[in-house]
Amino acid sequence: MIYLLCFVLFGVGMYGLLVKKNIIKLIMSMMISSYAIHIFLIASGFRRHGRAPVLDLSNNMQKAVMVDPLPQTLVLISIIVGAAGIALLCVVAIRLYQKFGTFDITKMKEEIED
Image (spheres, rainbow, N blue to C red):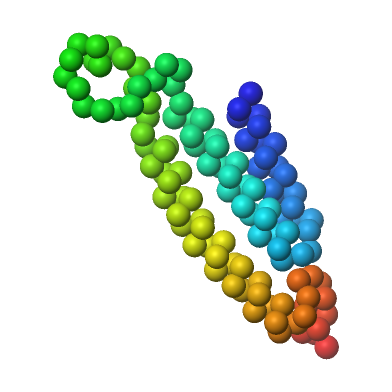
């Protein structure tokens, strides 16, 4: 069920990227699709009744189901890099608004062609 949610959320983000003409909506669509990928990666490392992978030499920990820490690490790095990318896109959007007076990319294209 969670994988279906990831697919739907990713589809909503891709729909926004392909259809919307407003730069702010495009940035939000990128964020939505990024969040869908994050949820998918976290869900792929989930184990029911899993424990944290902490080194313990007792017999109880050797038989316990461990949660995979790699997807969590990848998502954490992806969130940091994504936040920097979104900040950069917001700065570019503000500069485009200052130059063209609109967030609509079709109007920007028309003004460039004129």
